[in-house]
Length: 385
Image 1: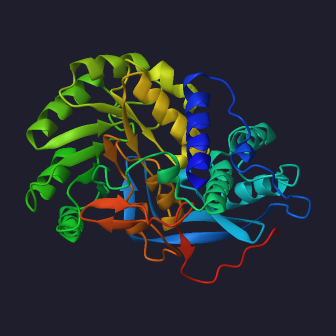
Image 2 (image 1 turned 90 degrees about the vertical axis):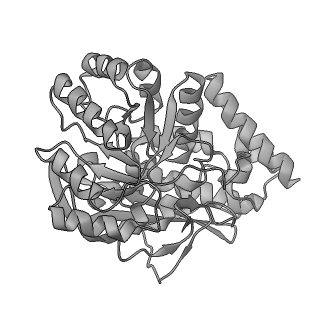
Image 3 (image 1 turned 180 degrees about the horizontal axis):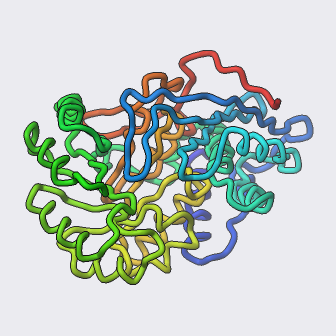
């Protein structure tokens, strides 16, 4: 019975992606639900992540990342979720909580009605993608626990068949860049370097003084001229760089398309791609897309983005913000078979309050427990205030 439920969910999600029609209610996977006395109860708590190092990218630096953790209780089970709120998303703990107070899940009979519930959330207010992701992740955790399966198994994925995760090194002094690089040795098989500033070559040379590991680079829109970007990409390829994220401003699609055609390395969209509606218009502009749960409202839409991008012949990457193991474990359910991964968010903080997916030989491996496979490691006080 569990296997039939699993494949029902997988096939309806795939159909909704490829045929552009709504999926059937997920409750059909379970048969009759005794829901008269069972209602989903959503609660939340703000939490501040403490970064191990000051994190600097093209444009700003920070030492903390605010998040809002969510919990949905139903029929004796609990699902956990998370909204991570880096500055560029434009959401705050206050805005997330304001959105969550509008959410009323009682009209839905079953947490497995993912398509219907996410459509309802999208209709509550525009934007608020991280807030919506916090509900989506908790729903997936809860639905997976109801059928007793992790989501990678629901989607028929091999949790071991995943790309190495990058380890991110922000813009910094040579001394700190070398220190961060040494911390990664023996744990990671590829590093990610934040570039897009005036000292990109210096950063790469500092890393190369320590290791010859492959590198990915993320310019965060920091390069302004296509000729500058192409020159830098050519030089970086000689230094062992294997891919480039968001080299130019997100709206300059014509220039990015020309750069992608001329670039010796694959070019991935980050800021240029947010949600499912963005994917098709980026075909031919970028080599691939970086999918992040906080940008696209969570796992439900992330899976659709992956399926559509692959159908269009684009490469796919699973990324993250600075997050606890809750959101990282959710992303880890979806990324088997992808081309690249950047799922080090929980490894960059000193106060992770969840246990879930683990770093194993340079890869983030899902736990195998039902749902997204997480449990809190400290007492968290959830409420609705």
